[in-house]
Length: 113
Image (cartoon, rainbow, N blue to C red):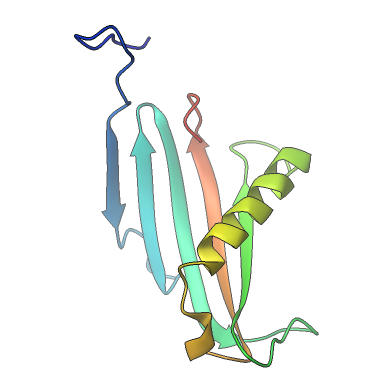
């Protein structure tokens, strides 16, 4: 249910963020918008596994886990969009030949993922 603003338009769903909820990742945060919530864990910079090493910057990997089941085409598409977005703001050139992994777990999806 969306509430209407005084001018007749829609209101944004309330947004909140809480950091440092998980102990194992190097960084973590929970993002909530309305009844949608996503938990994020950030690992790295760390040693690169396999042939993904980039000589001039960190290799950024984004993994999006749905609330139930295995990731599908939609999650893979969103992972690529998120990776491109994050590459624009992460200072990967400060950590060449390393890996940074962002794992996002959807806890609930009420339309704001």
